[in-house]
Image (cartoon, rainbow, N blue to C red; front, side, top):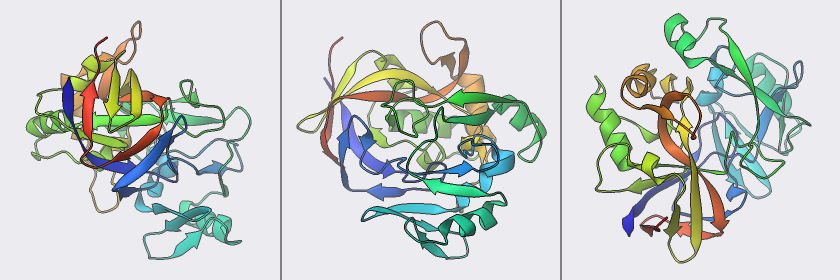
Length: 278
């Protein structure tokens, strides 16, 4: 059954930085080529830097990361550019975020990050010291990766339209939700939640298994580059799409779904997306 077409592809080469839209990309069991390949590690705590803890790391969403041969190029808001191979990149990024950090493509042993409780961030603000959960990486992803859960994250235009309809601003930007694949569909509502447990075929070969809805943290509410803060990006989901991300879990605000790669392959904008029967 045709589910739609690939409307956009996004890669985020450094965790919690802005990414790049690409026309086509290879996908393996480790996700889209170059996606979440690098991250910053806090030298004091050993934890991976993530804007899920906005008091410390929200400024990362003002930096842009793009893939270059053998590494990544980071552009800071003042226009400074640093490649991952540059000797001064760790010092430069430490100065930018105000903490001693190392840019790395190798997660530390037992890698974890802090996820501030989103309802407390909404209540107390992004600069407040709020309770946080310590989260291990990628239980549905290959070892040695920086994925929160699974290696591919997708959303439909139906979900974005629904959020926009409910938003006081009348719009919803996919960049806030940091999906890899945006699927244009004529369906309405939060349709991808109903795809859990099913597989998608994209283009000639790429096959994904939808494994969970994506629980949302404080990140969509934060400023992303020139996009301003938007607390409603989370409040709308809390009010209108609070569901269990996985069977047996408590309901929480969700938008988009996570997927694992059953069969790798290339994908391009405009490729047909087919939903296979259960």
